[in-house]
Image (cartoon, rainbow, N blue to C red):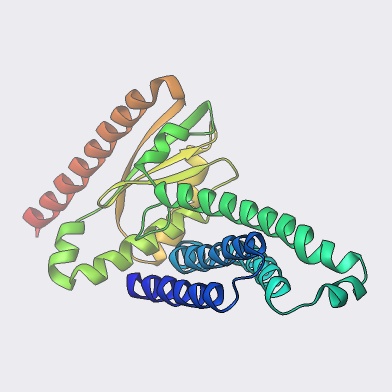
Length: 266
């Protein structure tokens, strides 16, 4: 990347110097051309540097390309096009090639930049593995009143130890997507950490949600525990999480006790 930029600037500077040496007439015009040429180099450099960042927003690169075309046109006008030839063109063409391309290019770059910023912000709030929200999203809950369900996969550490982390990652993805598919608008699924997930649901939705996901997760042979906090508000989010976490722990304890009792009876 740095080598490409250095090569671009070196070649452009040498070419600019040769042009100034070979033709020393009308210094003011040459100075104007020099500025235009440097603008071309600058736009090319920006395109090289930002391509990885803006590659998902092609409209930004289109905007840069339009501005680059305008700069090349102005440079070519100074070097190759005679005034007579330029005057023979319809008056709309120079306007489009100069002012039009710049305005459209700037608009495209602005729109692409806004989209890139939004994408970046979304990525900041998204878990890389499961593509659901991460815990930063807890500060941006859209619902003022909500039900909260705290989920945890059963024996996840044992699953990782026996089958490997790739298998464990697949289980997390499958579990999270099964939950996410049942969300309504404004409802959130958040990966709280490890194998822990929090669902933020509309008020009085917890029972319906749990009933909906039960058959799916049973069919997938995914064992999980959960705790519920109902009719909570954003002002009591920490309390809601703590309350649901306690109920989750109680459910896990009951499962462990039942499994131990069954083993003894055997």
